[in-house]
Amino acid sequence: MLGHKHIDKICIIALVLAMGLTALLFCGESLGLQKASASPAYATRLFDGSRVHTIDLQVEDWEAFLQEKAPEEEYIPCTVVVDGEEFRQVGLRAKGNNSRRLTHEYGLSRYSLKLEFDHYTGGNTYYGLDKLSLDSSFQDNSYLKTWLVYDMMDYMGVPTPLCSYVWVTVNGAPWGLFLAVEEPEESFAKRNFGSNYGELYKPDYRSLNDENADVALRYVDDDPQSYDNIFRNAKFKTSQTDQERLIGALKTLSTGENLESAIDVDEVLRYFTVQVFVMNWDSYLGPTGHNYFLYEEDGVLQILPWDYNLAFGTYALGMTDPIRDPNVLINYPIDTPAEGEVMLNRPLYHTLMQQNAYFRQYHEYFDALLSGYFESGEFQVRLRQTAQMIAPYVKQDPTAFCTYESHQLGVETLEEICQLRAQSARAQLNGEVPSTIRGQSENPDLYIDASSVDIADLGDFDDLETAKARQAAALEAVPTG
Image (cartoon, rainbow, N blue to C red; front, side):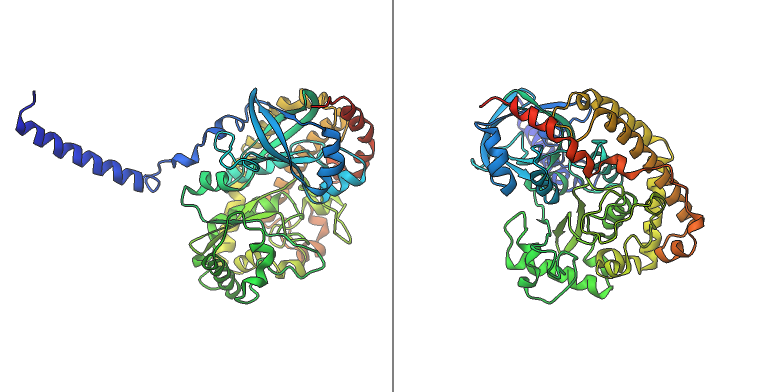
């Protein structure tokens, strides 16, 4: 039995250790320790990207879902079996905008899908994950565009959805190879920003015919109703105070002063580095201005990546005069990545680039992306390893939008586009190729030659016509659940 004097010493030591542990819990993140929420169980299960996973969707009437519910984005309940583990009463619906509309109009059945684990039963998750999407690779013969952009965003330190490839079956029948993507909602916010995360929005327009100033992140006035396209698409319930903080940040952005009090400049510049590299006009820098997430915490904004099946110059929808010339696309200027009218109405990019310090920092991040990811050989290794991993699944994909030979060509084309784009971006940073639209229009002879590239090899509307028979046969093979 311990003597009294020893007990006093032990109590003092225990108290000091407890205080130290408490301090570590509160300050560990600033000391470089990873938040517990940053490593949820689902991250190392479904989103282990070293292999292709399996998901079986058990649906009572799959054909009825495709014909009646999918075009309207209506939910149905289903049982989902992920890598052999069963999850009941999961909400299932189709997703997408133009991809969903065109899938329906072409009489196809391979929709991108959403799985919401807590849609019918509150608290249901997949090892902490509340929602994921299954990307169909619409207009992406390579199956790699979205995966590659997320890999680049993650490399640049941007908060990015986790993703992995999955072989999807329906009632046990093969349906195809999809990319599972972590949906930016509560689980995503907790993983990236900790348990005391801020507000998350997916700004999007009701109609393209409207002005949609809020989607462009332009300050209008102090009335929350002027920002319906933002607040209507809030991922979490927002208060008046939340709304006032966001409006205040947009107001500061409009002035061009004290920007770091309202914008996470470092994160935003990293995001735009990748966004501009991948030539994605179905985005904030495009005519529609959407397909991004907006994160706000303590009055400071971040922009987060989303939806890249039309990246790498393949976006034509909504453009009155879509760019087809590969020399123009591959060399598209990194300093004015949109036409003047669009650029002036995108303050999150334009206003930052008017500041010399931020402009230099943007170029520094471009240099880091080029030297660390592309010129180092990292890109080729990662792309080829992933392409090799998914190839056997693409070869037997019963609902593929393209043939296996077209897929192989798509992979080769994507690699060539990225290599040429990296060469052009490097030449633009070095002043050898003009980095503005005006400079390039005056000196088209300075382009990096990309005439060997056919952008359509990444996926085009012709592929949709040829996919009908394959998808119809796959649908007939699905048994009733």
